[in-house]
Length: 251
Image (cartoon, rainbow, N blue to C red; front, side):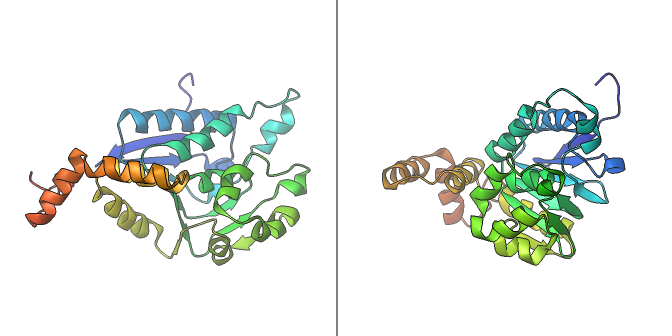
């Protein structure tokens, strides 16, 4: 980026990669620079073999959607490939992903949020699919969103662009947790994930994302029960101690 200030930061501590959207001047709009920096941050998380990725933001908004000023000033068609790839990466990482939302989310920002495995939002957060109001449709983001939600509950918000609240978003299946303290809830979730065996957590994420048939699941179960993690986990259970993959286990 030629020395320009980064719009997305990544810090990895204790196996947790915290990726922060940091473009508050335009409410973390999805500019080309921000998306490029997001990919760099995801690279950092993968290279560090982070066990969890938390996607958070600088106030006031989680993400306002596409950078409309950038789109309007560019006569050439905008390549949406980097955005598509970002959504795919968030959902496809081996590590569980958690969206930590302390502010408003609009349009494409809902795609980022919905691509994560767990979505923790503050009680007063608001949401809107505003695409139809500027003459476009929530096309790309519909892929992760429709994987989480039934279309009938999305029909009103998609077709009208109306603002809805956290309780409505949870009823849709769009989010998983509503809380007055996002940071505390995320900390509880990350602690829980870190207590699970890394390979077992990755396998569980794959099940959630791509459920298999009976034969697939029988094979997966038998493979996991033969794994080194399972051997250690069952031995730790029998010996009434913490498994070796938990930080501070002393083994």
